[in-house]
Each structure stands twice: as C-alpha cells, then as structure tokens.
Amino acid sequence: MSGSVHDPSGLLRRLAAGDGGAAAELFAAHRDRLRLMVRLRLDRRLQGRLDPSDVLQEAYLDVARRAPEYAANPTLPPYLWLRFLTGQRLLQLHRQHLGAQMRDAGQEVSLFQGALPQASSVSLANQLLGRLTSPTQAAVRAELQLRVQEALNGMEPLDREVLVLRHFEMLSNEETAAVLGVRKSAASNRYVRALRRLKEALGPLPGWGD
Image 1 (cartoon, one colour):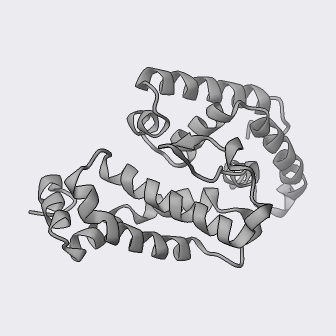
Image 2 (cartoon, helix red, strand yellow; image 1 turned 90 degrees about the horizontal axis):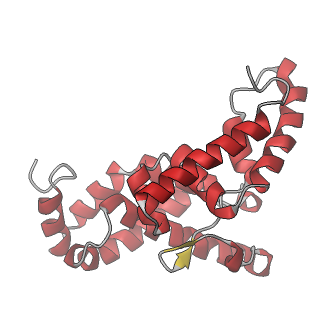
Image 3 (cartoon, helix red, strand yellow; image 1 turned 180 degrees about the horizontal axis):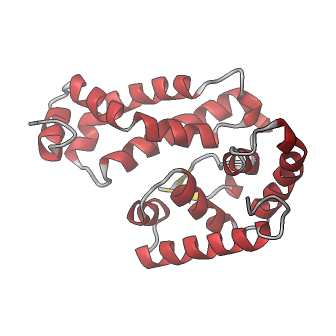
C-alpha cells in the first residue's frame, strides 16, 4: 500500500508534497487514540459546551496545515506528532473557554517544552470504576469514587502522568518515554511504581477486589 500509513516513507513523501489525502489518512488511522486522549484531558467544566469531536476537527486543520513541515523534519513518530498537535489545540480551547479559571499551566506536566491539560482525577476514577454500574452498586461507587480520586491526587504528578499515558491512553513504554523525555527504563520503573502505589491505596477498599 504505497504512501499509506503502512508505508511510512511513502506517506511522508505525500505529506511533503502537500497531499491533503495523506494527512486525512494519517489522522483517521489514529483518530480513536486521539479521541481517548481528548476525552481524558477535556476539562469537565466544558462538558456540554465542547465535545471531543469538536477538538479533533480543529486539530485536524492544524495537522493538515503543518503536515509538509513535519514531513520535512519528522523528529517524532507520527502518532506522537498528532497527539502533540491535538493536545496543543485542546490547551488553546481550554484557555479560550475558561480563561482565568484555567489551572496554572505551571502545575501541569511539561511535554515538548509545552503543557497538555492534565487528566483530572474525576475522569480517571470514572474510567477505573466504569464497571460498577448496577443500581445495587451505586452507593459503593459513590464512596469508591472519592477514595480513588484521593489516591490519584496523592500520587506524584509525574507518576500519575505515567499512569495516564500507559494505562489510560495505552501508549507503549517507548512512546511514554519519548513524551516525557526520559529513558525507557525510567518510564518503565515509574509505571510499575505508580501501579503499585495505586494498588496499595485501593486494595483495602470494599468492593474493589470484585
């Protein structure tokens, strides 16, 4: 499949030539992963005002515009480049809609000399507790939600970010290391440590073992 996502060198040639179809193919191939990232990091105050599809639509315009520039100097793997542009667009939309209400960017984990919005503990807890949905589990879920959020908020920011990247965004260890600018061994060690600490915090909770 010459020039497709299965032929990176051909795809880069098409991107460099300004082939809009190549940018569309690349974005479509990774849309589901990008949507997951946006859903995790979209500020909950914007629910109902901004949908992940809106973010992806604007991000795609950035991708199409900057594709020849990327093809000329592809310093990142294609997905991480798409993720970076989508994250930057999400950050701009947060600033546009929230303004002074937005969290201090200095408190967020720096990625590529910039900052992506953090995944909130509420979003992460909802992901972890997604299976507790029956009416008989409603009271258990409400208590667990708070306890899980406390456990996540008590983690070191970088450990929590590694957990988000590996466990929730499902990035590989190599991709996680590239995003955070650390060695692969360091990313792996932090992920194992983050999982252990989360397990220690959640293990004693009633109903969690189920």
